[in-house]
Amino acid sequence: MDYCNRFSENVALPVCLITVKSVSRVNSMTVAWSTPLSSNPPLFGFSIRKNRYTYQLILKEEEFTVSFLSLEKSDLAVKLGRISGREGDKVSAISLKLKDSEIVQSPYVEEAYFSMECKLENIFETGDHDFVVGKVLAVHPSKNILKESQPAIYLGNDTFTTIDLSQVKKFETKEIVASIRNSLSNRGVQND
Image 1 (cartoon, rainbow, N blue to C red):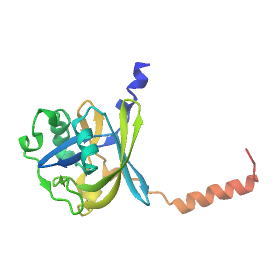
Image 2: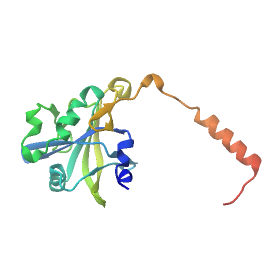
Image 3: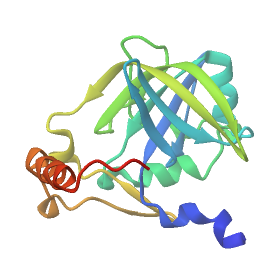
Image 4: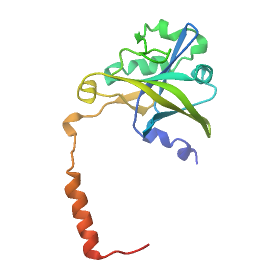
């Protein structure tokens, strides 16, 4: 059963930083369990433990930013993920470069290849983590996001990799779907 509880160690995930400003203090933490949820409205979500300092700030401020890191900047994920904001101002301690957001008060990470400004939409209890849902209010992409950035992918145990864009595989979806539909129509409709 313990192996099942550690399933996430076998799932490669993109790395992002969740940043919140409360009064004059800014805190940022690392998250690997995150995902887009909806295009309309634009929603993004991530998992976080209730005891995290950032969780308390999100509840208080009801906003946050999400910044995605390149492999080159993945050291920031370790620096911000292994020390709690309760210990002090880790953002200043590592000289994290921040940029003012357009809509929310929380800044985003300037060194990220892509960032989003979010307003807290909902929180769901999901076992030992809560799932935070934010409505995306603004985005800050760099040019040619994936081609230039080499997104950091978390492999567990403070190990990171990136995607190899020389190994990209593009499919002709219309032809594949047409072929499958043709095969289905030749077999006749069968109801389950």
